[in-house]
Length: 414
Image (tube, rainbow, N blue to C red; front, top):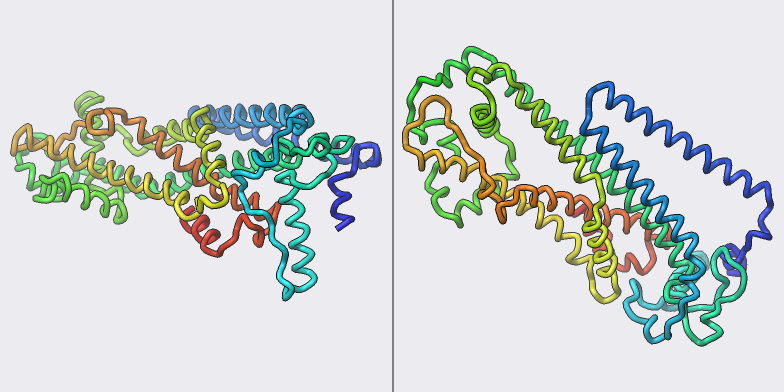
């Protein structure tokens, strides 16, 4: 225990100069390498005319600069903040864990030693025990007054680490989501190529009259269940699990988009799949950023990790519920666009033309769905980052993971 204690009490004067030089050299080298990698990726985006992805990369660089500035503030203000004293009664509330309990006598010596090390880390996290302030000289002033620090230096240090872990997980998860989305969209290429064939143009002859319900799109959406809001909601909810983007929906939406925005005769020349890819990149530029509202939610998520709130039983399910509602809503929008076709008449000329509108979305705000997806990605990254950070710093046997259900729920729902 004494050796572990010295790790936190070692001052700069006791550190060899060569060790400081080596650490500075390594950090500087890593920073230069990362900078050149980001610069190379940006040049490749420019060369490939991926302007939206280049702007997303610039936003990531801005987020990294913000985190660097936040890191600098935490480092500079660490000592002043740790000297703010509050009473022990106030400091004993809203802890993420209960006070560590003594290990059972049946535990082995190794388990007992690990428990003592992790317990001491948690006590330093709470600033319950007297200790030297991390990377500063002198004993804790608050302890001399019979109080504890508002935020201990060790707590600021852990917050510092967690913020960086959270940002990394958020960026990586957005990149993985973009990659999975582009992978799923590859099968749309065959559908797009089909629109160039003579068979497709013959079947969708613009001079051909048909009943709306007899079209492929009509048979999929214009049924008895689509007339009731309740049955429509139920069918839309389950449809998202079985091919959320159907071929007939893709072709119908493509036809409606070209009819509304392009000149007649553009059906065979326009590449709708590439347009959707560019739109996905534009949306990625939004979700990869961390806005002030998202940071505010991050603070709320931190507050929920309070002992006794059992947030691991309900917090991971919030993004799951939101994303299922968003998926069901998007399915309902496609069906409602089909119902509008019948409002204009039972007979359609050529392929059915759908007309999207803001009134189909919640509160007439289509971008609200994008914000909800952004929030889900961030909250999911928060859960995974919190699990990784707490496991690495305090081990998987710490009070942050008191039950197996906690670990399973966080990882499976993520």
